[in-house]
Length: 481
Image 1 (spheres, helix red, strand yellow):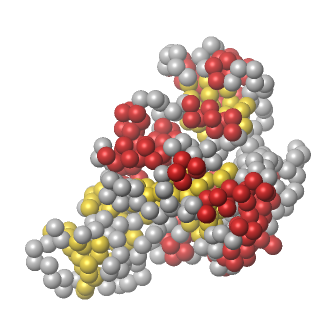
Image 2 (cartoon, one colour):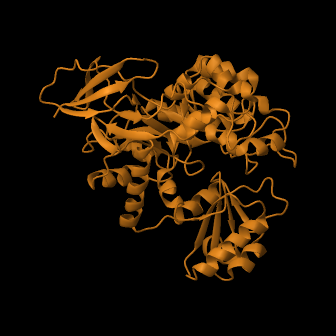
Image 3 (tube, rainbow, N blue to C red):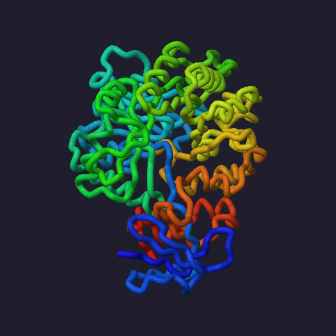
């Protein structure tokens, strides 16, 4: 069946147009009233704006699907505040299962997260609070006894924390897939048509199962990590190649390499020391990083290197240069000015999360004092010729590209003064970093219909953009027309 979207506005154009869609693609764009498709279904947009469907190009989707069920501790202003939230939840829900919370940021807390605080709040019930950056977990004694016997302190960091987070995922796939379906629907309601899923684990089976069961509102590119890259190669998976039996919805994505830690956990690898000492952590030697990239590229899988600190970004760029490969750097949060031009020169995409700049501005001002001119340097990267790809890193930030676009355009949130406003970018560039297609004949009919012109909207209006409809391959996945 052919579909005609009538009375559409294209951003930057004052004229109304009719857009004809068939076989999953845009077949024609004509002045309003001129589309010749008498047998077509017609849906009136009544002057609403038609834009390419949005992509979130860095998510941990299963973690995101679980977040709404976890205790929100993101607003806790101290360890004591977080413990009080745990106490309230434990009293309201006296079950014996692990009490899982998410979202704490302890850098600016006046007190330390300790086992004793959580022990007093929840007694013998295991408690695991996952940091907002996913690189750290805070446990009580009962949780340590179950998950990490013999460990010292109150925190698990990096690989130990990642391993624990994976163990907290429900084994009941029916429940988990239902939560994922709900999360996918919420994404469609924000105009999202595709994601790059960098969830830990083997997501080929996960998404094949979900799509077979009817999950058809998102295109998914799934990544693999070091422990499963050989399995992907053995199966002949290649970046950009669709998985058979998924109608083109599931595609092999990148090989994710975690080269350093994170800002909030003080493990991002930096040229200069943190206020408390130390430069962060390198998870791989330069030789190991080069070998990983070389193996992936030789087998047709695009590398995506997690690098947050300026030293980690430099080493990642060095590895791309040594191997002679293109790929992505995930996060690119702090970049030495001498390295900015290397992204474009090497063909390395800066896969960034603009909402993190708003979440972490105060932490960056403290931990990277005097160097935040190079933090989240979107305008500088763009000016150097680098390609930007926007994501959320959900659940670290909400899976909502409009939040990323607003943060990149305004460098502000919650009424605060813009942070390093010299790094603001035009809305056209922010939209380009959040999309994969154009509204043009021959392009995939992955589209979003919005109530306001994004090219003239303020940052606050962008953040709250109302989405009237979303289409994937010409089929409505969200419709509020």
